[in-house]
Amino acid sequence: MIYYINCKDMEKISKALKLCGNSADIYSCRILCLIESYKDYDGMISLWIQYDQNNYPTAVIIKYGSDITLSFGENADIDEIREFIALVGASSVLSRIKLFDSSESGIIMRLAGKKTDNRRNNNPDVDFSPDLSAVHKLLTVCGGKGFQCPSYEDFILDTSHKLRHGCAECCAVMSGDELLSYAMTAAMTDKSAVIGAVCTRPEYRGNGYGSVCVTYLIDRLGNKEIFIMREREENESFYKKLGFENCGEFYIYRPSDL
Image (cartoon, rainbow, N blue to C red):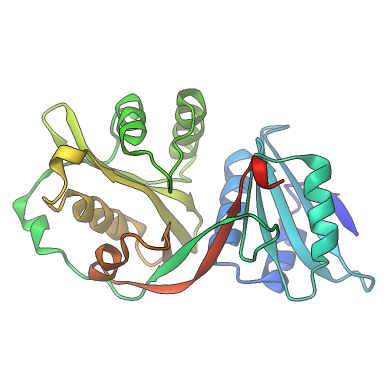
């Protein structure tokens, strides 16, 4: 059975996440980041836990806006989860397995060891609090099949909120007032972080600016477990040079899949 849980009941949620997977994986990281960011704001997030007949937690489900993230163990009732998602509705579902016939999949990479990119020695102009309007423009330019830029309002509200509440970090390479490259944490907790939105203006690619953003961001994240999510056929060598290694797969389901 699936039960609604108060997002402030962290003892119950933490126990469920540990039993359903890994408290530092990308799914738990996203769930915990959303809770920390929005637990005091009624209606922003909804969370449910699935229990088996022995009252053992088998899955954690969080919904932010119309996006769902799942964390579940081997004994989860997948059919019940599918029915539940159809009932509550979603514009996207992030999961570690293929829940629906149609899906988009990608690769998860984990930082195995920090490596210094020599191009950092060029001393680029780095900004850790860039103008978010300029960031959204850059993300829109760089958007494509593997990255769908959120709406301006959604991006500004969510990112600024997480930055104010210490639930996100970002780094940008600037040339005067022009934003050349950018990276941020898509989710962050005290134990882990997921780096995302790594992009560089097309005319400035090949200069190492993306590596600069990711490397500086890694430095700011300290000893956290760090992950990235990439398209299956893209950017593997880029991230391997920075110390990442492949460690799993993820699946995203869009409205047409549901």
